[in-house]
Amino acid sequence: MNNKRSILISGASTGIGRECALLLDKQGFKVFAGVRKTSDFEALTLSGNRNIQPVILDVCKDKDVRSVIKLVSEDKTYRFFGLINNAGLGISGLVEVMPFEEFKKLFEVNLFGVHRLTRAFLPMIRKNEGRIINIGSSSSFFSGPALGPYAATKFALRAYTDALRMEMKFFNVFVSLVAPGPVESAIWDKAQVYKEKVRKNTDPELLEVYNTFLKAGDKLLDKVELIPAMHVANAVLHGLIARKPKYVYLVGKNAKMAHFISKIPQKWSDYLFLSRWQKIVDS
Image 1 (cartoon, rainbow, N blue to C red):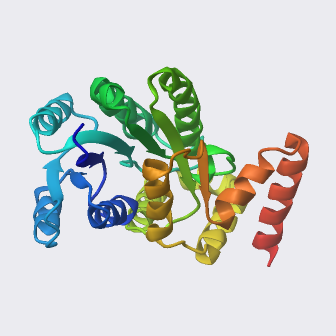
Image 2 (tube, one colour; image 1 turned 180 degrees about the horizontal axis):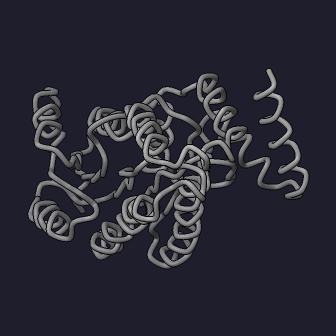
């Protein structure tokens, strides 16, 4: 059997995806790095990593998926081994405030995009007894004010990953969920731009209704400790090469705390969380 293995990563232009691409290249994998923009394609091409091959991939477009699967399947030098579903949107907001179309777009990328890509590559992965790694979040285990829409997609991704993991056991294919806390990434800048746009286009009276949550959310964001994307990439690497990979990788203290909170009674977690938010507002 060909021991040279290839990997496909979606959302490889920045943050977690890019760090995964660079790390797996160093480990000897051929990396098909999915990016949406030509400028990102060119930046990765110039990175000097000979085993990284950028590919234009929007997980919401069937034609992109077909093009990439054709490219990967025609590469006879490397055996396709792993799919890393990393592409995602990090926007969110209060349930009453967030526009329906934005909520729908979150699911289109964070869940339906994962399914589109996974379903297309499963025949190759099953044949080669490969690996699938889905990038979740601390929000895969815990939701709260202004997190609902985003967390809904990540809860759903966890359920999707659980089902897929059990379905693939019969084929010696391992499926893992990597769930990091807040990560150093350009996604935070995009989230800030989105937040400002939504507030600008929302009725001021409605914003005043939720003023406590908005103030607390802004203060919490200022205190967030971001973890290096490399920490997530190391978890992904373990999921790909370990003889017995973990079902779930909790990366960072926020992810571990969210997982812990998900295990305690709901009324307690609600009380603790809302009390903390009120203290932040009053401080």
